[in-house]
Length: 436
Ligand SMILES: [Zn+2]
Image (tube, rainbow, N blue to C red; front, side, top):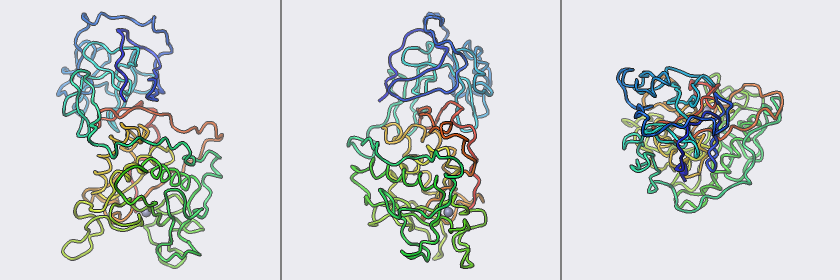
């Protein structure tokens, strides 16, 4: 699906769109969209570029001509880049990209018409970078020597079947303002395409008193589960059952169990309909209700977390639903077991590359998906071996629906181990801290 092969020998200095890939750079340091106005260097006379984003030990390693143009230094991560950047702060012909969740750097920009300087390749994010190496492409891709670009490992994808468009699933985002979108209501209907809000933890079919959630959370859950049911309909594995929904809040916004004197979650969580426990997609059970998906006992005692690899986890579908959820700006954090998280995050790049997921999922997942492989005290280590937990932002909505448009397509995850995106797509995202 990578189409960024056509290049000319000009340098671009403006806003770039990559037709066919839906990529969009929100930030641009120049308004000059005239191709003809850009300088046309002689590639043969251009010095070999430094390894933008590649390994360095001192800033001198980044100090070739192009590096000097961009003010590059050796970042703390051991990669060449500008020390920092903001929207519009980069030199003409460059833009501000994320190297990681915390490091941002100016990189030269390119698109299908505007080439990178000699020695660099134009990756799908619209950034000029050093050619790939076997290591830089990660485990899910291979480095194509001719192009210098990573390519998907086609052997690793959930299905060879065509990917359904799924244009008729319900809307992802609530756009009717703070009052309506933050309104607490019973999850309704109780079952829909891809989900099942079944009675749990003392609920009955007639009284699902632990199943009240905000409208925006309800919409994201309905949308993402419907998307999985549609996009994964041809996958040969899994039980093809809807996803089970667990605890939310009580009708008055309190923690489930509060009305019976037994709050079932720590203070501060599952209040006001901002949080929901959701089962994992599973392979061997007939349904996807909340249940352990892994061995979780140690020395005969329940450890309340996976003590070895999951044995009934449908990794691909979980990656699909979790990745889909992260594309919404309303999601604050999603936590899961420490043995589930690595599997899900390893599966995400292939889903983004192959088109099952919007590419924003693979950049935003780094910030929004969290888990503890060891107990660091963040609160995720235990009690997530039978469900994951989604938590919404309680921030107010924009005053007018029009100004709360869904996120732009964002930038591609190109090298699976190095997501890069325009910084605009990361601003304002909350941290990982949560308890459950
Ligand atoms: Zn929870």
